[in-house]
Amino acid sequence: MNFEDVIESRVRPLAETLVREGLEAISIADGEIEIELSRSLVQPLEQAVSPTEEAAGPGPEYDVLTSDVVGRVRFLRPPVAAGSVVDADRELAFIEALGIRNPIRSRGAGRVAVVYVEEGQAVDYGAPLFAIDRSRV
Amino acid sequence: MFRKVLVANRGEIALRIIRACRELGVATVAIFSEADRSALHVRLADEAFCVGPGPAARSYLNIPNIISTALITGADALHPGYGFLAENSRFAQICTDHGITFIGPSPRVIEQMGDKANAKQIMDSAGVPTIPGSGILANLDDAKKAAKSIGYPVLLKATAGGGGRGMRAVASEGEIGNAFASAQSEAEANFQDGRLYMEKLIVRPRHIEVQILADTHGEVVHLGERDCSIQKPSHQKLIEETPAPGLAADLRDELCKVAVRAGQACGYTNAGTLEFLVAGDQFYFMEMNTRIQVEHPVTELIYGVDLVKEQIRIAFGEPLGFGQADLSPHGHAIECRINAEDPERDFAPDAGTVTAVELPGGPGIRVDTHLFAGLAIPPYYDSLLAKIVAVGRTRASALARMERALAETRIEGVKTTTAICRRILEDARFQEGGVPIDFLDEAFLREHVLTEA
Image 1 (cartoon, rainbow over the protein chains, first blue to last red):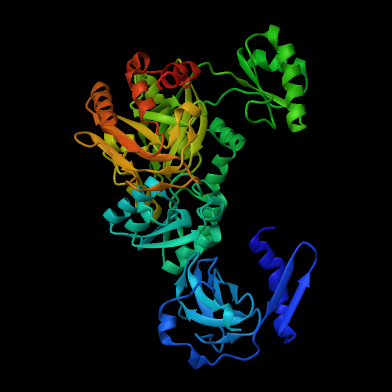
Image 2 (cartoon, each protein chain N blue to C red; image 1 turned 180 degrees about the vertical axis):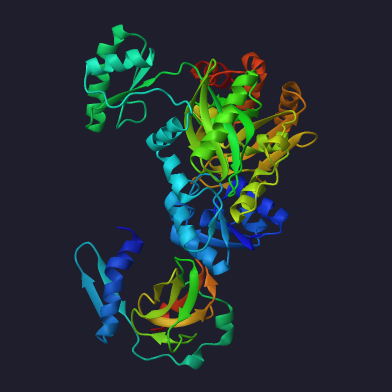
């Protein structure tokens, strides 16, 4: 199992449980693998984020969500914006392609650090849509 | 005219289509894979959309993303080039269903010609000579009867066959018993299907094809023939020329007449090519290619017709601006395909970064290429790097120009077919003209490739 598979199959469900159950820490061990997750239950203040940090672009801990399809960006109501905090795997927007709705999910909790696109914008494969800061949950 | 054409291809043919559109005043949309982000077609088109990762199945064959790109950009037509989706009738139908004109023949014709048995039947009934063959052979007696009516030598083939398995050449009735039994058991072992049929064995034929153009108003013309007998052992073409050297005038006329008749018979529109095997004064229909072909420039150079522009005009519904009487070839043209391949290793594709490029020029030379120094050749696609085309008043002058052009060509960083093309041009039999499709056989390659190092 490679690192990404471990994240996908083991860490992510655990992180979702952590958030869903309102826990502060969780750990498991099964002989093959040991995972320990913890989080601060104190919501960081929006003001704590300086505009210069945003302008500098996503840091290494940011997760950039990209488009798999060619289509147009449609935001949900109310639209997600930079600074929005998502507490779990949520639909942030969708890409409309050939009349089909392709949801863009946050893939877990985090704070939306950057919104790269506008309502109705045409995007292609690999186009960055959102940067999610996983460290600020 | 169309407002905007989506170019559903990459490499040199994408550039060729973009150039034709620009000259017609039509805007272009390129598509590309993540592996082609720095490709020339991305830069030369008016707009460019990434449609997927490197592997073609997820990008250049990604029908939903390609159609979505056309709709989003407001492209009203799509040119498929060659390869990828060019002969996919379902894709052509999807384009039509979305109000995008597919620049090529109708989905129905693409489908008919894509099915070999169906195509053969249509050609048969249009009076086009096809390779004589049998239906499924029930037993050895059946095979003997079929062979007698077709005439030896014959080829036994497995209906489920491929890659030469379950295939036997039979020279005379004395050999047919053994050949039938071994072909049948080989087919059973390989395909769990021992059924065999028979075709006439065409001995050392030439590959000669005829270019046609057909508009949507019922006009069909031919633009002469191309001799594509210089093929790699895998039957992929390496050198093509027109006119076919030494081809008797009456045979050439007959081939061209038959090609036009075939186009009319199947309700063809747009550019197409009928491929024939020619042996002595006999010729046989092999298949029809329902797209622009790699080797189309040689025809363009001696007829003075821009085939890609004609494709676009025809697709828009314009009548051909000329009839058969207006078309006359001038001179001789030849094309060498410069591929990123290693002739010493069975022409295995070679990927890598091209570190230096010097391309030929001067009188009578045309180069269609997407190459530039620093280009990283992705491992996912066709290995064609450049088409060097030479034209002259005579075959001798075209060959002299080609030899000069190949000597000027320098591509570093990957193995190419430049040197093997030069060896072929130096060969006395090739210079004499009219060689068969097995010219580039093992003996030639052993002599000229393996001893080079």
